[in-house]
Length: 422
Ligand SMILES: [Zn+2]
Image (cartoon, rainbow, N blue to C red):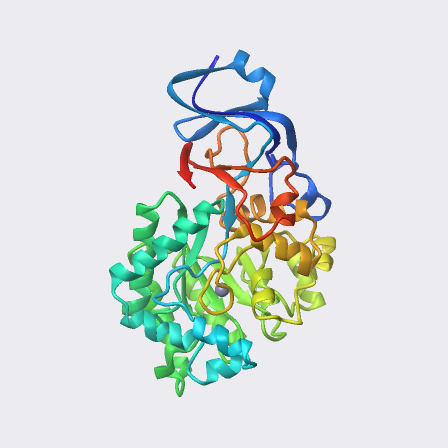
């Protein structure tokens, strides 16, 4: 008999996303739609880890409940792995609703940026913001993510853009991670944009990133990954390569914002440097698709930004999936280009704007997102030995997570075997 301190029983659909390949890897092509659903399923956990999973009628014979065992009746409901959001900027000092109004009145994102808005606005706000205030704001966003079913999220710096404030942001991420049930995976992004004070000598800023900021982040073990925004007006391919080579030598995994606003062949660079993820990809080239498909780099798609900025150019998600790219989905939650914490909203946008299926969207928001954070050994699917991070949803059809949008269907969000939200 297996002893458990948490039991979920009666799930109409228990979506496990158990591995379909040997050895396990991120899902590609047709495997993206293979959810490995147990109809009338049950799950048991102990000390935060899954110890048993199977048909509900076998549960009483195979699992005994320890005293104080948490029991969740999921009758008629869907259970999925906790959602994983692999690209967020959740630490910022203030929202930018003013710019949202300006865009509604006809101004473009780049016009607003040129007038001192955009990332530069968030940098000025961040530098002026008190540490406790930053943690409070980020904590609220983290709580909201959890309420909407996200149990692990990546979190980037990138509004500090100098040594002191990049460290301040990453320390805020660490503080929120340790004080909230959600797990945050920290990424350094000092190469988000060239700060105003370095506009006339940008290569000096690249030196600062390579020689001071990244070594300090590494010394304090404040980040797992380093990210660079490759774009005209941000960082060239050559600068990105310098920065990421320095980051790799310090032990960081590499992530990239690439081919978002113009075709830069950034995807090809990301693959060549062995990046864990290449994100956005609105302007990815045919060569970029081919080399991404042949690589271990995950393509992280962000339909919320396509929606929020009303972009006509969108990543060719169908061609990417057919070519064999392992795709994941992320919110890119940030005050400028997508003020949204919800991964189910993102899944809806992926289906509507990118023509992904609800099955592909769910895989991309769980197991593939976990691979893109190098945590697929622990999260992203429901199998024995993994963390008991899961969500019980108020529906009997997993497709509703993408289809029924603008509401929160999460009834219980369970993190490490404990009810964490709502
Ligand atoms: Zn971003």
